[in-house]
Image (tube, rainbow, N blue to C red; front, side, top):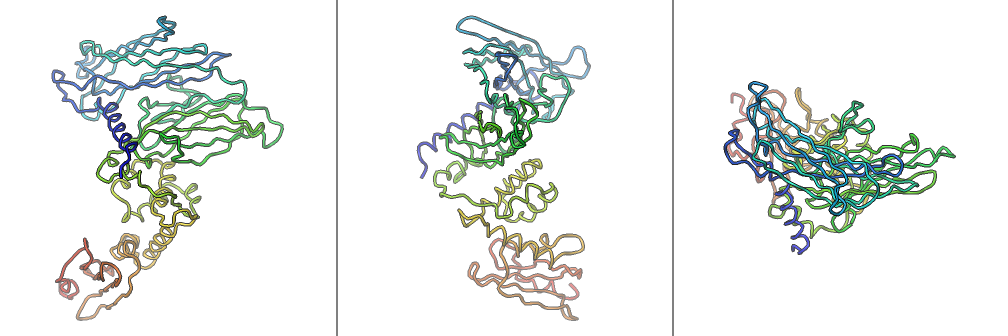
Length: 483
């Protein structure tokens, strides 16, 4: 049964996606044909500046495919678009600060890849604590003054003289960078996600925050501080908890950077909450930022967004050995997920390919937790049994060119479990080697026949009575010596 709240949530997210991706509709290379609506996304964050001042940073992103490109007058064979960016800080009707600039985007050709990219924009004001409005306008100068405007209410709060956190900035990527660049803060290049929208195409949420006023240390333990992360849903309920970490204090202030896998969250509105605890004083400080998740499949019939209302109480476990994933190399994680290829759905397989190393560590835990049939217990018997069968397949069926779990017998063992009975027939002058596996309690009784068709000691599936499997009533021909 779909509750009204869930239905409203689904509707809201669909509308949200339309708003944020309206600018991503395809347009032809011809500049004379109708373009998508001119639109950009924007966000802002406050950080501590000198003394009691606040550093207000605003960011925006505009899809290249909504811009008007013309043949570049200075560079033959290239195309350019030009934007006017205007930002004003207002209190009431008074403009306190403003800045504006033009930015130019030049491309070699207007192909689909070029049009799929976005142009990031960033600017800032240094302000006193107080209530303001941030008015941000972007104009397409080659597009007959097509423009869009956002006006945000901004509350800049004085930072506590005790332990405190800046706002949480959400990003598409964060990497080490010591160059002088508007997108670089404290040795990190931060490419902001001004839409705050994540999903299958952007499964990892990168976040940045600053910690202020860490206390001087009087003990070894006091030299540390810890950070924890959790996600709250639209109702303020805990939707996901990420592993926290403890760090040595670099001084009275520090920087928090992390990447969090959020693709397993059902489409909806969430808040990322970061809490810092000073081990010297035991004081804590918390900051949060709203974000959105959209996965198209959630809104299909019986999709996750609809099924969530009927979700049973309890949570699956990734298993008693889940901590081993934290130290596994990426290729080791890839192997385990590949072993689970037969029970992974198409969406999960696509998502795995898009994850980085850190994302895979979290995703593999959630993958197994979703399949745990004993909710509320620390063990995951399903995972233990499945991976045990994978190792059995590797030991028994490994061939010259592939692992045992990749063979036909390995797949059947993993999908259907151990057979109730195996009939083995050795090679002879009358027939090639073959086996018949019998399952008596599945689908009313099913059989699988494997034969060494190519005389290479590799038994391949040639016939089965199971639904959806290879069916060949004339399979006997495969074991004939001369076939």
